[in-house]
Amino acid sequence: MGIMDRLSRLIRANVNEMIDKAEDPEKMLDQILRDMQTNITTARAQVAAMIAQEKELEADLNETRELGGEWGEKAQRAVTAGKDDLAREALRRKRDNEENSKVYEQQYRVQLQAVDKLKSQLRQLEAKYQTTLSQKDSLIARQRRAKAQVQVAQTLSTFSPMDPTGELDRMERKIRGGESQAAAMLEMGDESFEAQFRELDVDHDIEAELEALKGGGSAGLALGSGGDAPGATADAADDPMAASVSASGSDDAPGTPR
Image (cartoon, rainbow, N blue to C red; front, side, top):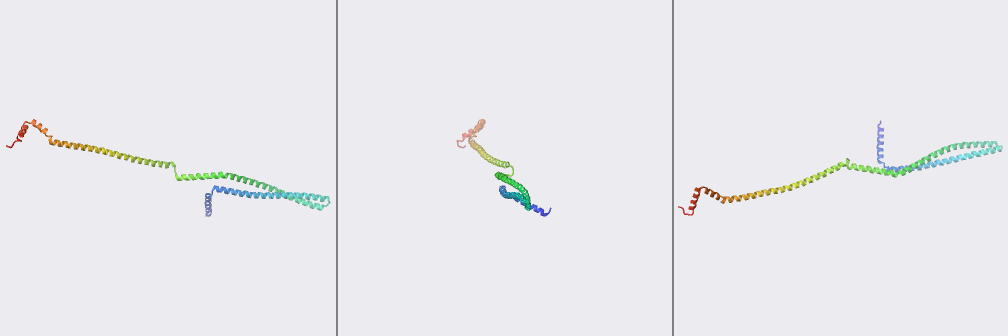
């Protein structure tokens, strides 16, 4: 394949693609109706012209027939008058008109067929025009509906090229994550409060132990100052010698030294 052929095909392909994209069905329908109306007007003019020719041929045919009949009558009168030369001339003209009438008759028949054919085509074109005109609204409605469906499909594909349920699942996971985070924060807050209460309990135990220690120290001091007397008394009671020494000591205490 030559370069020029490939280039020509490429140009035609690009031009056709541009034309296809630029075509608007609604506008194309209007243009088709205008073209059909123009064709109908042209066809009517052609049919009218053909009918006029038909009428002319019919008139020529009738005229030649009448002339042929008239020259036949003239030939008869010339024969009756004994003028053979005049009768011969009348017969020649009669023959010429008869031949012309045959030609006109043939042309007239052909013209009749042509006119009938054009009339039939004109009726078909007018019927097609009426059908297209009646279907125009429904075709435009279908085109607009298809265009709207395409726009909706494009919008949906732009919004979510995949299954929309995937977006819903993602939103659900996000909301569930927020709920989990909120629950975790609440749980941490509860634990902090419990820890504070536990600290209060610990402090209470410490204070109780401190009070116990304080109470135990006071008792020890009291025992240290006067708590040995009972023990000493018991020892003296058990040991007579200690008791006598103690007694002698106690006797000497009020007196003067010896």
